View 1 (cartoon, rainbow, N blue to C red):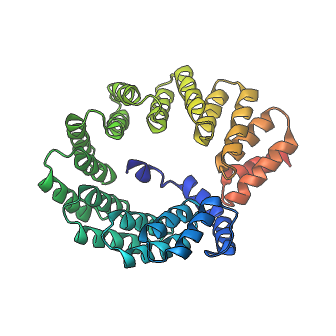
View 2 (cartoon, rainbow, N blue to C red):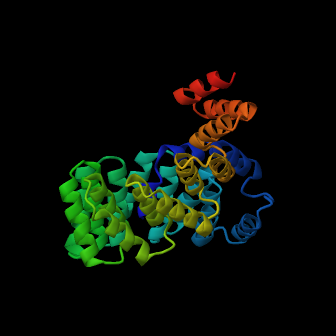
View 3 (cartoon, helix red, strand yellow):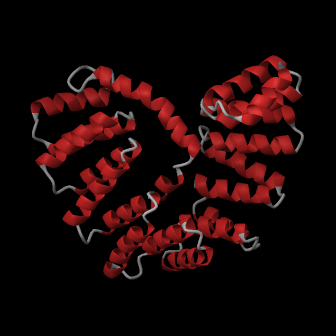
Length: 336
């Protein structure tokens, strides 16, 4: 649940937007009843042709389309599945996710409201509704949904976590900390709550923040979000070597995680290791070809190294992705 909250930042939205058109067209060109070149889709198409009233097959195909960002197709299949069998809560959850990722937040919200009406005591559905309401800044409604959870399960850690997220978004740090603290008291393994406690205490300048990040990474040593938060905190308190080691660990765990390379590059820049920083920004771009800042900082590194043509190309690419990027404009003027 919590990763959904965290991924809605500008860079990821831009990545989804830029890749969406190509992926969507590819799915449209394939068609639902033709050979697609995707083995799973071809198999499901054949199965649906033989069993057109099997709701689970439409749901399975919707999952495949969702992964391909073929949101129109996923939504059509999920609505078909629900029309055949409206008793499967997973159908509603995926349909809400498809609408949300397709920037149709109103329909996403209404889908979950319908699911709650059909399954009024199902805690995961109530929590998902509260999450979507919070994302849409409907904080009162989100907390009402959380209250419904606590009426069913008064010690539900996820509910207190969602209280914390709402208070955090509303700027009520004290109540957010209290809520996250209650969450970990009820579930000491709730990593995201430990991360948020660390972040909030770090904002307040409290040294105890480090202990919270350490707890999060001890509970789940391969949790990328926990490691990233710890690395960022180490950087903020001047522990550059410790931070660099953390970001390197992240990329050993997940070689495709662009932010690990990018942050390592920034640290190496601060440590005057420009060639090594250039390599990290290059790796970030390979992992995420629309990483605007990675292009800009690779340009900065190239400029320092005397590679003016490379710097020019990187600044130009950054500006293609973000035409109002002032620092990239200034960089381009320097190397012309």
